[in-house]
Image (cartoon, rainbow, N blue to C red; front, side):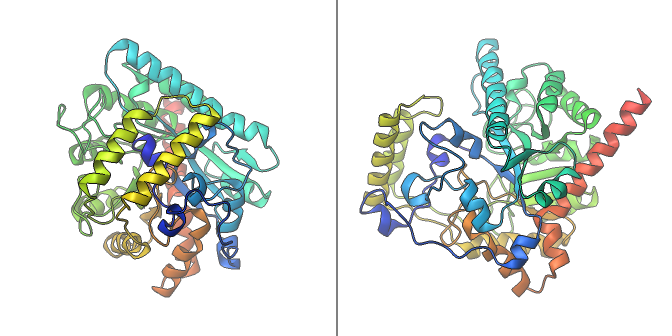
Length: 409
């Protein structure tokens, strides 16, 4: 996730935006039988941020054109998304003790909110804690809820705090976000540690001991090198892209892709950094002012949220956003598959955190990816690995490593 404005991803059709918030949108076709058969998991759902929006419910149907959100239960059913890893995201702030304590409390409460969503709708959602749980939950007709951490900053200087998050349900954890922190250098900030910090090495060891999959998305290439060298279990990049398609610091080059695969890891392709786009100066200025007015930690009343949405729609109408397209997302996915094969590639599109593209507006469009993979020559068994098999294999490997370490302690 990036900023509140990226939570409010500009994925609305411009023709609808230009006339203000839409009251309805054309209904998309339901997922086809193949999509419904597949166990379909996304490794980076920033949707927990939507749970804090006033008047918003995961059970209700929403549209991107109305409120910019991309995931809810009706669309999960429509697009055949069985669930995934629901992110506890914390935007990086100062590294002083007071700020870090506030971040810890925020992250804990975000985790509680995810569990409350499941508890409030037990007929629709179920918590997952083991790799084997996902298939059983799908068979029960419910949606899969694993928890993940995006940005380990809230752990402060105590990697063992990860144990509390593990008990809450966290099974994947990242290290850094857009800024370098106490655990690792960020791919989009100045290096301080030349990779993982000493504290980051401790955190990695704690992940291995618990059975939490290390996530190096957002962390620097050198941090990835350190993790590949030191981790006793495979690594995942929960929402990354390919530098060979779009040379951006958040993306990974082919050499690192091959090293990740050689260590048993998986890259989950996102839909954010898939094409180089330069927005107009007018839009950039308008969006900067919008972000300053509506920072991520601002609590909004229902009326304030409606005002915020109206202002955002007005910006998009006056200064339309340049957007990547579905084919750009597929270019990243197909390139990774070509470089490392079907055993090491998955999908983490960064929904509700900046993801989406023209033609891939929300999760109702997921069957398009499956169809494109089939057209490209991949079998149903291949597609099953891409949609969930690979990340569940990595999670099972983390569980096995934790079992060995705990048996030997």
